[in-house]
Length: 126
Image (cartoon, rainbow, N blue to C red; front, side, top):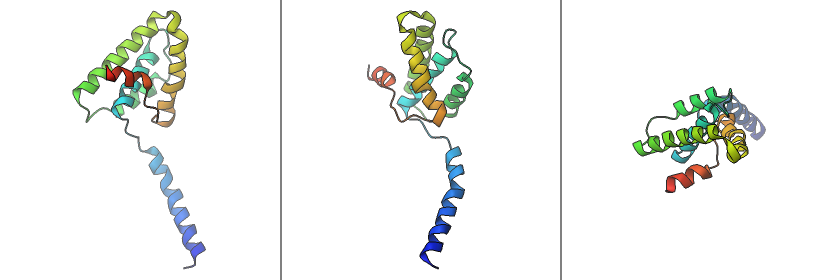
């Protein structure tokens, strides 16, 4: 075969397999899992709730399994703390809205976030 024909066949094979790769959910690491749960807390709070909460809940549900108990405890705590912060309101409101509309939407927009979630990382270090 000529090199151009081989290259064309490889390109076609890669293009055909790309949708299957895009549909596979990316596994979140433990820090991202905790941050996704925090986002779920923000998105389901009375003050900052959004229709995207269902997508975040589905992401969190798809990421359960295979983690140690401590990670689940931290995730539950992060979700509860976020709901409490959001419902309290006050001066933290704009920061929480920015977190919800930025980092949180990056989780459900692309399936994962490459950001390690600085809040969750600092919480896990305590």
